[in-house]
Amino acid sequence: MSDERFLLKDMLNRETVTALAACIAGVDTTFDADDFVADVLDDSWADLELKQRTRHITETMAAHLPASYPRALDVLLDAARDAPELGWEAMSFSDFVEVYGLDDPERSIPALAEFTKLASAEFAVRPFILEYPDRMYATMHAWTDDGDWRVRRLASEGCRPRLPWGMALKPLQADPTPILPILSALRLDPSEDVRRSVANNLNDIAKDHPG
Image (cartoon, rainbow, N blue to C red; front, side, top):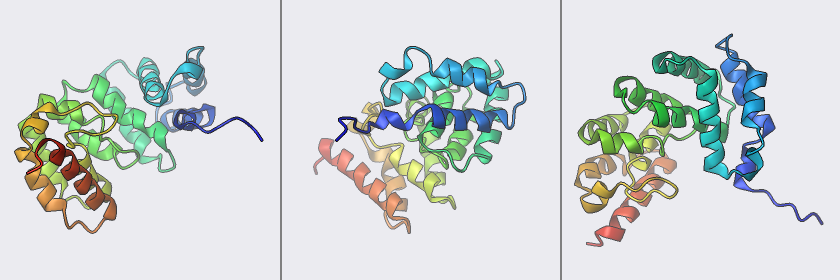
Protein backbone atom coordinates (compact mmCIF):
# COMPACT_ATOMS: atom_id res chain seq x y z
CA MET A 1 0.00 0.00 0.00
CA SER A 2 1.33 3.43 -0.91
CA ASP A 3 2.09 5.90 1.87
CA GLU A 4 1.13 8.78 -0.40
CA ARG A 5 -1.99 10.66 0.59
CA PHE A 6 -3.94 13.34 -1.20
CA LEU A 7 -3.47 16.85 0.14
CA LEU A 8 -5.75 19.78 -0.64
CA LYS A 9 -2.84 21.65 -2.15
CA ASP A 10 -2.53 18.86 -4.70
CA MET A 11 -5.66 20.24 -6.38
CA LEU A 12 -3.30 22.86 -7.77
CA ASN A 13 -0.86 20.99 -9.97
CA ARG A 14 0.65 21.06 -13.45
CA GLU A 15 -2.60 19.92 -15.04
CA THR A 16 -4.82 22.52 -13.39
CA VAL A 17 -2.30 25.35 -13.79
CA THR A 18 -1.99 24.44 -17.48
CA ALA A 19 -5.78 24.52 -17.84
CA LEU A 20 -5.87 27.97 -16.25
CA ALA A 21 -3.11 29.18 -18.58
CA ALA A 22 -4.98 27.87 -21.61
CA CYS A 23 -8.13 29.78 -20.62
CA ILE A 24 -6.23 33.04 -20.33
CA ALA A 25 -4.21 32.50 -23.50
CA GLY A 26 -7.43 31.77 -25.33
CA VAL A 27 -8.58 35.37 -24.88
CA ASP A 28 -5.21 37.16 -24.79
CA THR A 29 -2.72 36.34 -27.54
CA THR A 30 0.07 38.14 -25.67
CA PHE A 31 -0.21 35.76 -22.71
CA ASP A 32 2.52 33.10 -22.97
CA ALA A 33 0.95 30.03 -21.41
CA ASP A 34 4.14 27.95 -21.39
CA ASP A 35 6.19 30.65 -19.68
CA PHE A 36 3.39 31.20 -17.16
CA VAL A 37 3.24 27.51 -16.23
CA ALA A 38 7.02 27.33 -15.92
CA ASP A 39 7.09 30.39 -13.66
CA VAL A 40 4.30 29.03 -11.46
CA LEU A 41 5.90 25.61 -11.05
CA ASP A 42 9.19 27.01 -9.82
CA ASP A 43 11.52 25.68 -7.12
CA SER A 44 9.26 26.99 -4.34
CA TRP A 45 6.08 25.27 -5.58
CA ALA A 46 6.38 21.92 -3.81
CA ASP A 47 6.66 23.55 -0.38
CA LEU A 48 3.66 25.86 -0.75
CA GLU A 49 0.33 25.08 0.91
CA LEU A 50 -3.04 25.52 -0.80
CA LYS A 51 -3.68 29.22 -0.24
CA GLN A 52 0.00 29.98 -0.73
CA ARG A 53 -0.17 28.27 -4.11
CA THR A 54 -3.24 30.31 -5.01
CA ARG A 55 -1.45 33.55 -4.14
CA HIS A 56 1.69 32.42 -6.02
CA ILE A 57 -0.44 31.76 -9.11
CA THR A 58 -2.07 35.17 -8.70
CA GLU A 59 1.22 37.03 -8.46
CA THR A 60 2.68 35.12 -11.39
CA MET A 61 -0.47 35.80 -13.39
CA ALA A 62 -0.09 39.52 -12.71
CA ALA A 63 3.46 39.42 -14.07
CA HIS A 64 2.18 37.94 -17.34
CA LEU A 65 -0.95 40.10 -17.75
CA PRO A 66 -1.14 43.74 -18.91
CA ALA A 67 0.30 46.11 -16.33
CA SER A 68 -2.92 48.13 -16.28
CA TYR A 69 -5.34 46.69 -13.73
CA PRO A 70 -8.47 47.49 -15.80
CA ARG A 71 -6.97 45.82 -18.88
CA ALA A 72 -5.80 42.80 -16.90
CA LEU A 73 -9.21 42.47 -15.26
CA ASP A 74 -10.93 42.54 -18.65
CA VAL A 75 -8.71 39.67 -19.78
CA LEU A 76 -9.63 37.62 -16.72
CA LEU A 77 -13.34 38.37 -17.09
CA ASP A 78 -13.21 37.19 -20.69
CA ALA A 79 -11.28 34.08 -19.63
CA ALA A 80 -13.72 33.31 -16.82
CA ARG A 81 -16.67 33.36 -19.23
CA ASP A 82 -14.96 30.64 -21.27
CA ALA A 83 -13.75 28.57 -18.31
CA PRO A 84 -16.68 26.52 -16.95
CA GLU A 85 -14.50 23.49 -16.24
CA LEU A 86 -11.97 25.13 -13.93
CA GLY A 87 -11.82 24.15 -10.25
CA TRP A 88 -9.89 25.62 -7.34
CA GLU A 89 -7.40 27.17 -9.78
CA ALA A 90 -10.14 29.68 -10.66
CA MET A 91 -9.77 31.10 -7.13
CA SER A 92 -6.86 33.09 -8.55
CA PHE A 93 -9.31 35.21 -10.55
CA SER A 94 -10.95 36.60 -7.41
CA ASP A 95 -7.62 36.57 -5.56
CA PHE A 96 -6.25 38.84 -8.30
CA VAL A 97 -9.05 41.30 -7.52
CA GLU A 98 -8.29 41.10 -3.80
CA VAL A 99 -4.58 41.76 -4.29
CA TYR A 100 -4.63 44.36 -7.06
CA GLY A 101 -8.13 45.83 -7.22
CA LEU A 102 -8.99 47.18 -3.77
CA ASP A 103 -8.55 50.78 -4.96
CA ASP A 104 -10.92 50.25 -7.89
CA PRO A 105 -14.22 49.15 -6.34
CA GLU A 106 -16.26 50.22 -9.38
CA ARG A 107 -14.65 47.49 -11.46
CA SER A 108 -13.62 45.05 -8.75
CA ILE A 109 -16.89 44.44 -6.90
CA PRO A 110 -18.92 43.43 -9.99
CA ALA A 111 -15.99 41.27 -11.08
CA LEU A 112 -16.13 39.33 -7.83
CA ALA A 113 -19.80 38.55 -8.52
CA GLU A 114 -18.73 37.10 -11.88
CA PHE A 115 -15.72 35.17 -10.60
CA THR A 116 -17.68 33.59 -7.75
CA LYS A 117 -19.60 31.62 -10.39
CA LEU A 118 -16.41 29.65 -11.07
CA ALA A 119 -14.93 29.45 -7.58
CA SER A 120 -16.26 31.21 -4.51
CA ALA A 121 -15.02 34.77 -3.96
CA GLU A 122 -15.81 34.52 -0.24
CA PHE A 123 -12.20 35.25 0.76
CA ALA A 124 -11.54 38.00 -1.77
CA VAL A 125 -14.65 40.00 -0.91
CA ARG A 126 -13.66 40.51 2.72
CA PRO A 127 -11.09 43.31 2.30
CA PHE A 128 -13.74 45.22 0.35
CA ILE A 129 -16.18 44.81 3.26
CA LEU A 130 -13.62 46.30 5.62
CA GLU A 131 -12.63 49.11 3.22
CA TYR A 132 -16.13 50.01 1.95
CA PRO A 133 -18.56 48.66 4.57
CA ASP A 134 -21.72 50.61 3.73
CA ARG A 135 -21.26 50.12 0.02
CA MET A 136 -20.63 46.40 0.42
CA TYR A 137 -23.58 45.78 2.75
CA ALA A 138 -25.86 47.41 0.18
CA THR A 139 -24.27 45.49 -2.68
CA MET A 140 -24.46 42.16 -0.87
CA HIS A 141 -28.09 42.78 -0.03
CA ALA A 142 -28.71 43.39 -3.73
CA TRP A 143 -26.94 40.10 -4.47
CA THR A 144 -29.61 38.28 -2.44
CA ASP A 145 -31.94 38.77 -5.43
CA ASP A 146 -29.44 37.51 -8.00
CA GLY A 147 -30.62 34.70 -10.26
CA ASP A 148 -27.43 32.71 -9.67
CA TRP A 149 -27.31 30.83 -6.35
CA ARG A 150 -23.53 31.21 -6.23
CA VAL A 151 -23.84 34.99 -6.11
CA ARG A 152 -26.54 34.74 -3.45
CA ARG A 153 -24.29 32.43 -1.44
CA LEU A 154 -21.46 34.96 -1.72
CA ALA A 155 -23.76 37.52 -0.10
CA SER A 156 -23.94 35.34 3.01
CA GLU A 157 -20.64 33.47 3.03
CA GLY A 158 -18.55 36.52 2.23
CA CYS A 159 -19.75 38.42 5.30
CA ARG A 160 -19.38 35.61 7.82
CA PRO A 161 -17.69 37.25 10.82
CA ARG A 162 -15.47 34.21 11.44
CA LEU A 163 -15.05 32.55 8.04
CA PRO A 164 -12.53 29.67 8.33
CA TRP A 165 -9.32 30.44 6.43
CA GLY A 166 -10.54 33.98 5.84
CA MET A 167 -9.61 37.23 7.55
CA ALA A 168 -11.83 37.98 10.54
CA LEU A 169 -14.38 40.76 10.14
CA LYS A 170 -13.94 42.27 13.57
CA PRO A 171 -16.51 45.07 13.10
CA LEU A 172 -19.14 42.40 12.41
CA GLN A 173 -17.97 40.34 15.36
CA ALA A 174 -18.65 43.39 17.51
CA ASP A 175 -21.93 44.31 15.83
CA PRO A 176 -23.52 41.99 13.25
CA THR A 177 -26.55 44.24 12.80
CA PRO A 178 -25.56 45.42 9.28
CA ILE A 179 -25.69 41.90 7.83
CA LEU A 180 -28.90 40.70 9.47
CA PRO A 181 -31.05 41.95 6.55
CA ILE A 182 -28.85 39.90 4.19
CA LEU A 183 -29.35 36.75 6.24
CA SER A 184 -33.06 37.42 6.61
CA ALA A 185 -33.44 37.72 2.85
CA LEU A 186 -31.66 34.40 2.28
CA ARG A 187 -32.87 32.23 5.13
CA LEU A 188 -35.56 30.57 2.98
CA ASP A 189 -33.53 30.53 -0.21
CA PRO A 190 -34.38 27.64 -2.58
CA SER A 191 -30.71 26.59 -2.67
CA GLU A 192 -29.58 24.37 0.19
CA ASP A 193 -26.03 25.67 -0.26
CA VAL A 194 -27.25 29.20 0.36
CA ARG A 195 -29.35 28.18 3.39
CA ARG A 196 -26.38 26.28 4.79
CA SER A 197 -24.26 29.40 4.40
CA VAL A 198 -26.84 31.43 6.29
CA ALA A 199 -26.77 28.85 9.09
CA ASN A 200 -22.97 29.00 9.23
CA ASN A 201 -23.08 32.79 9.36
CA LEU A 202 -25.57 32.69 12.23
CA ASN A 203 -23.34 30.20 14.01
CA ASP A 204 -20.44 32.65 13.66
CA ILE A 205 -22.59 35.43 15.09
CA ALA A 206 -23.73 33.24 17.99
CA LYS A 207 -20.14 32.72 19.11
CA ASP A 208 -19.93 36.42 19.95
CA HIS A 209 -23.63 37.09 20.63
CA PRO A 210 -25.19 33.96 22.11
CA GLY A 211 -28.36 35.89 22.91
